[in-house]
Length: 324
Image (cartoon, rainbow, N blue to C red; front, side, top):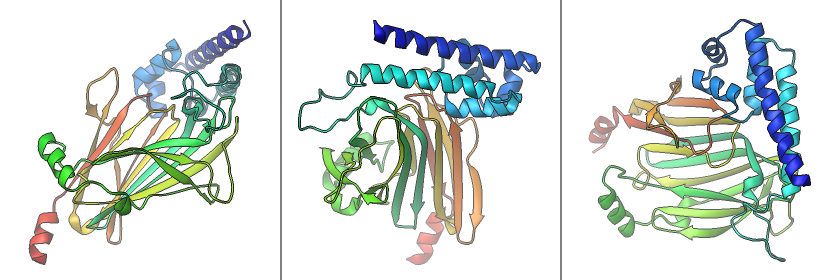
């Protein structure tokens, strides 16, 4: 009965948030399209938020409150929702959705209790190697300590030719030595263990521990983790995909290339309810000395959405010919 009461409270606070948003939009005399434009969101997202089809998020609440000059009233409705959600998660102890039952002596996984407050990804290419650095601000909204976090490394040099790509990786598999995987949390090195090891795909558990100490993520806490790895351009294709597997409040991507290659970047978005479409906003280009950067940001991306950035080097072939 207690769990049912908690769940009802979450539903009620979500409805209160939607009502507060709609009320202030009407007070300011703004259409959903006008509010979406002021916030930098798609109009359908505002509509889904007011109807309750999307759950409140921190970033959306902040931006909406500022755009409507609501005096933190929308923000406070989000805080009510978040606190109710945390209480409900504690009541359920967030174990039902874990990948496997917890047994004494095994670490808690509880990835379902995690929220990604900020996800930043950087890809740097030096003309031979790609170095990828991922930083995530994780928040534990459950009732148990989180002691490990699953990451994936997937490569595909020839995405348009699956048979040739599979043959390529059978002959030239991605190896742990070349990946040079590193991971840190709270300025501590994270121990890691292999979950899956395939020719072009790896899964790894990053553990909140090392040989010197343990530093689990406790309920209500937030912490930055960072991991990085390297892949040669003989195994990495001209694309970089970000998949939203956990509730995420903000996603940033940066691609950095040699400016001499004259890189060009574009992107697409795919979700469970829509076909592949161009990104709603273009990557922003910045030139700095010999480097050219492209950055792209989105707030409150939908769960299970996939964002793919692609590129080509318009001067690359000419430079290679000159070097021969």
